Image 1 (cartoon, rainbow, N blue to C red):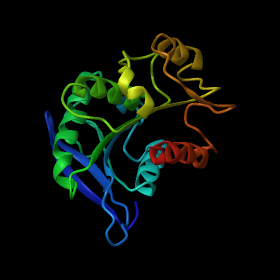
Image 2 (tube, helix red, strand yellow):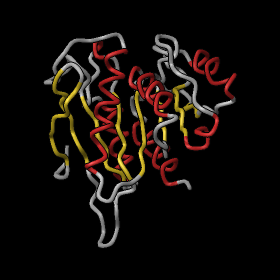
Image 3 (cartoon, helix red, strand yellow):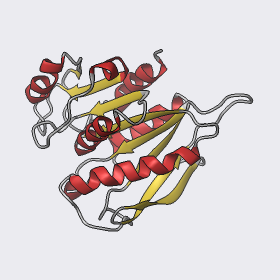
Image 4 (cartoon, rainbow, N blue to C red):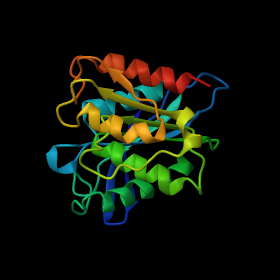
Length: 216
């Protein structure tokens, strides 16, 4: 956390959800670009909103002028409820997202992001929101396509989507991600020699995400 990180709680379908909100330091006359909701890795394998990749994503969004909201899924940390195999976690994500609009002053754009299991949840949220809200940016890292039903990305969202995967990911094989992306003709950014948790390569990950966020 930093001096501009605020602890808060959101109302979730299974009870309160623990969250951290990171806000950029804005210059006079500058406004937030929007709010990014970021989902963490699998709750049953140590995934929390304090995961290093999740923190890296939050820093990238803040650096690019976004407010970053990361939260603990049900049953993690101080969040109430129990693990629900992705179904309840999607509802948690949507509940947090629905409560984020008041955080924006003035209202801005919406971005979704996630790492591993969190990328699966973010993809499902993007699919569900397709007819309801415009998504300015979507960032999926280490997407758990071999373990969960990751939703396809709508064609009109492709130019605003960044999919990043490690070449030597031993948790989610790169080949599986390519099999998911290929029918959609969705580009995948591959980092050579990197495994699932991006050990030693978090600055590179942040740079790639920041570049994507700063692109028109």
